[in-house]
Structure formats: C-alpha cells, structure tokens
Image 1 (cartoon, helix red, strand yellow):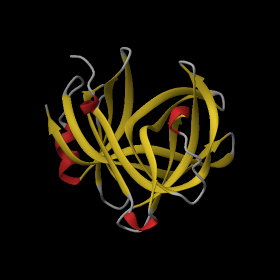
Image 2: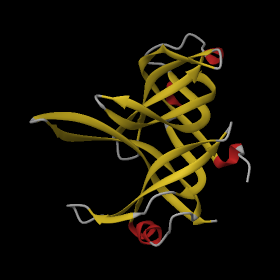
Image 3: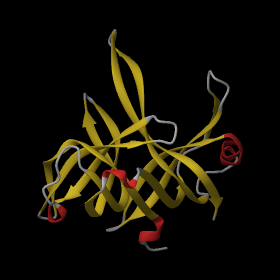
Length: 201
C-alpha cells in the first residue's frame, strides 16, 4: 500500500516559546527548529519541538500564537553517546492567529504495530499499554511513533500482535523524567502520542 497524507496528519495551535532557528538542510531547503507550548484541558502544558521548512518562514516571534497542519516525524539521532528516537511535528502550513483562538493538539495516524506491546500499571493504579507504530512516509521511508493507550484502550491494545494495522487519534505529549547516568541524576524529556481512540484496520 502506498503512502497517503491520511496516514499521518496533525493540527496544532499553541504559543511559540523558543525562536525558530536554522537547524540543517534537506533536499536543498533549510529546516528551522523551535518549540511551542500547548495547554491541555487539565491546565498542564506540553512543550513540543516543531520543524518548519524555510519556504514557510514568516518572521514568527516568541509569544506568537501559531497554528499549523503537517505530520508527525521521527528521527534517529546520536545524542550523548547513544542513539535516540526523536519525535517532531513537521509543518506543511503554518500561520499566526489570535491568542484567544484556544490551543489544539490533534494527531491521527494509520500504521502497523512494529514491536511487542507492553501492558503495565502505574504506581497510581492506571493501566497503560506502550506501543510502537510504524507509519509510511514519502520516499519509501517510515516514521516510528511511540504511543500510550490508557484504560479500556490499553486492554484492547495489549492484545495486538506485531504487524496489526491500526488507526489512532490522540495528542502528542511531553513527559519529564529523571535518569541516573553514571551516578548523576539528569532531567530528561520524553515525547509520545497519548491515544484517545484506537481502531483495528
């Protein structure tokens, strides 16, 4: 099956909190990296990196409320002596909007389970299933998206086998955690898709 935009789509609206600065070039175009803050209904904020192609740059400034459509991409990068999977929303359309428009964080993916699911219970008693979804991209590439299903969806997800095709809807979230590296406690940030709806395809 070929790649279609319907397999990987997102719409986000939030506040730019880190300037968009040139990061690298790809296919002759400069890509810019920045960070946005999107508020959840709970009042907690997700701080997310975003990638914007140079052709879409319009003089965005810190504090601007921006909205964009695009796709969720993953990159393997060598960071601090280890390979890490990085997640980034990639903008295909982006513009400023009024600050009172409200924040939005919506991602829809269709892909295949590419690693055994892991069902667990948090210290607070919440049931969670961790999944890794492979989603097709242009040029015969794929993005690998870590996902978390909660509650009833977690029970459905834990039964899925490698290769199962699913459609999921949710939001990209940031999560802080502490890691012990050679006796030094370091603050880290993980990014994952929190699933609101899951369907077997």
